[in-house]
Image 1 (tube, one colour):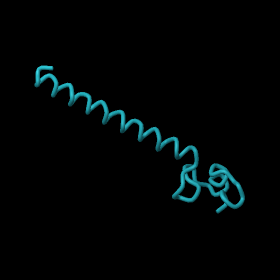
Image 2 (cartoon, one colour):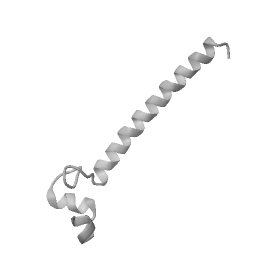
Image 3 (cartoon, rainbow, N blue to C red):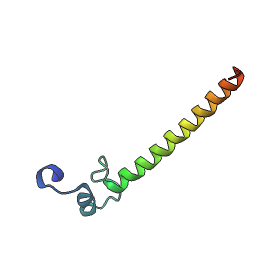
Image 4 (tube, helix red, strand yellow):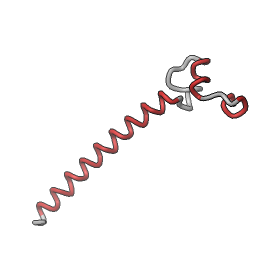
Length: 64
């Protein structure tokens, strides 16, 4: 409500309320969102590396 009605940033709302990663224990401020983005990126990169290894093994078995 503060964000949409009063134009306050999520970071400003979080600073006023005290949580370090969220504005209201549901919505992330920029610090919380950055942490989630980093973990998600690491997870996706690990999954892609595993898929690449799997496809390489299949190509090797199939003689390609």
